[in-house]
Image (cartoon, rainbow, N blue to C red; front, top):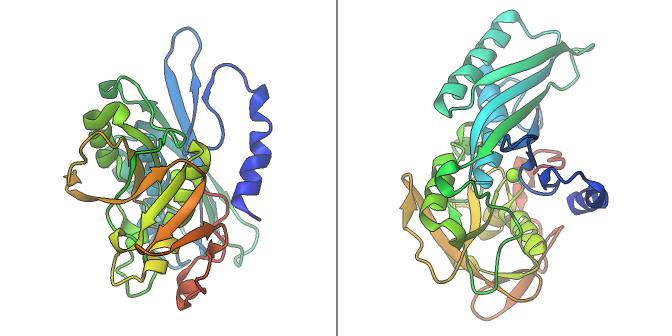
Length: 321
Ligand SMILES: [Mg+2]
């Protein structure tokens, strides 16, 4: 299954959507306008599979954090404000009440931490003990009133913009990498701070769940532009190689474009920000070392072989927005 193909298929139905749909499928969250002048609400859903996105024996607190933080990362990608969350869990019959209690307590704690209260959910028990546990989190959000209720979409990058990222990339899943993917902080404060400061000069944004290269490809595609990345500028985590930084995924950092006329702060909410490339006319994502350009393909970077980090990757990432 290729993510672009699935999104394309869903997109073909977008032309017949109701006028109330402000952001159709294809962005980090969708958005609808409520009737009778009720404002705009954003929503998105994410899934976490035990044994794929984190080890089956991870603690209930780890599960809760990842389930909620993945959704909150999508809220950050829109520069929106989270308002509430519902979580569904299909659990192994081996799971005991104490586990689900700790899981729900952590979700409630996160709700307080990120101003996104748990407002409902559902628990089902799977028929067999060997089935993977599946968690689904649905998040609701509103546009940021302190930034004129504007939302930052994937389609706003313009030739002349610079391409920027928060934090660092690669080896999030590596056993010796500190377990970044288990305890990352969704970059809501970074996104809101940037948006309030840069306003329209923050032209597009996405969060990095599937890998920086793949997310850049989304921005380039949605914005109908060409993106050039300077490999030596990409900040790397835990001695990651460039390929790992571009392809591993599960970084949950922000990737965004800024109008070339504005200045990027060095950091926001104590998270470093780095310019890694530029936006040009054209299409595709290219990596440059100053001499040669290499084009990114859905299967990876051309002319670069798969490295040994595949063992660290989940078996299936599915279609993640
Ligand atoms: Mg996303």
